[in-house]
Amino acid sequence: MMLRSMLEFEMGASLFLVGTALVLAGVVGVLQPDGHRWSVLLALLAGAGVGLAGLGIGLPSISHGSDETFWRVFFAASVAGFATVAGVLVLTWQRAHRATD
Image (cartoon, rainbow, N blue to C red; front, side):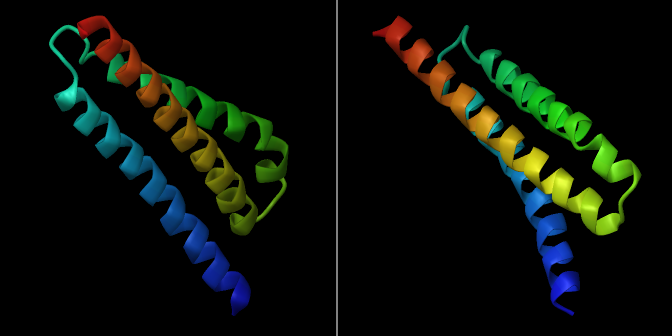
């Protein structure tokens, strides 16, 4: 029973993090000054790249594991991707506002 609830948590949390990263990028993009809005796409690309790299690193575990193993690896990749998106968004925000000051 505990394993099932942990699996559901990892599934839900993974999708929540991916969705939240997309929403944050959209909000930051709207708030960026003209000419800097496209930079949020770089944050999404970086986050997707880190997430895919995480899945690639975990591929041996996924290919020989169960659904629980897949979602555990996917959750870890989602956390890394979200952190990357958030970090790059902070950098793009600082850069854009330094350029306009």
